[in-house]
Image (tube, rainbow, N blue to C red; front, side, top):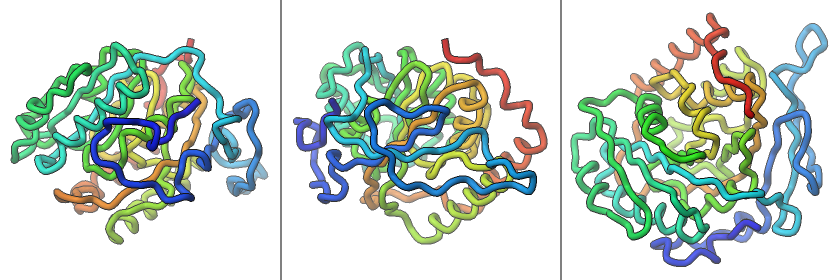
Length: 312
């Protein structure tokens, strides 16, 4: 059974969840040929029909509502590597690492680890991450000599990951690590569990860019997931090691590549909080342009999505 944040002790400062955001009323979507057992279907928008009369996308999406009594539970808890990409997050990284470790301990994730990837920060991000040193969860810090991009940072983390599953969480403090409890019950060796932001708390320009990017993804590839760029995901390590994008497209590549290989995509709602410190880079023209360029290259050569073996 999933634990709500009220049940997890010692995870640092708490933001009290709004009643509508409490885990007891979480919303989950399953993208596959089947749904999770013991769920109740909720209304959802179907993917559009193309000119040939077919549903667009690799598979249909079904929305389901779960509760603690109906939520599926993993048969065996995986070992987990938390991959935390960070760029100029000196104001937040120590707290994020400490809270991540506390959440992993509270969920009983033994023999797990944290990998912080410092993507060429100009501040003390790497030093403060190393100094966090939470008890019971080993922390490794890998640094890039220069800023290489969000996707490159994640790929470095995936290559360094030494556990069965990878948990990706952005290091900007906009997610609560304790919300891993929402994703963990849905994990299986053949699933990618991706969060979607229940109520997004970003600057308007960043939301506009995300909306435009998502619209283009749907135009080129059909329906993927409702929040493809959400930086809160849990999936088998092999999926992460198969990725190739260096920029923000890596989140889209992950979903498309995993689905093509036969993985089931499960969507789980997670709260999203305003950034308390630091500076967001997702809306910078350089980042946006790079994402659109990578998206176009992927569209021109869809065979590049091959290469990930089916789950076994």
